[in-house]
Length: 93
Image 1 (spheres, one colour):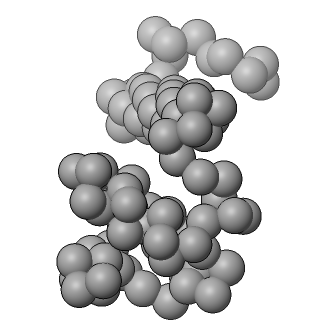
Image 2 (cartoon, one colour; image 1 turned 180 degrees about the vertical axis):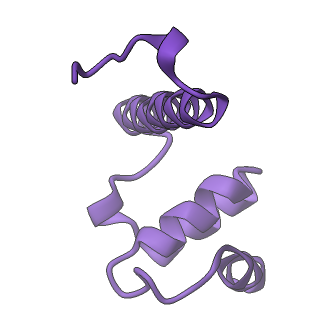
């Protein structure tokens, strides 16, 4: 079976699955590229070099989403907090 099957032979569910997987890969790639560009411009700190002060700065600049994301990616917080939990902690900083 080739990697790209004949679309007409697939059921609606299979077509929806392939479409959703393709869409997910495109969105994930776009987020990675956007993150990379913001790091290069100096707007975001590198994931490995993020500190609490960086998270506070991002929050105060109105970049709450990025602040929460970087907070969750910090080595000491990785995998510990849900989005809602991290959001609450970032607001309290």
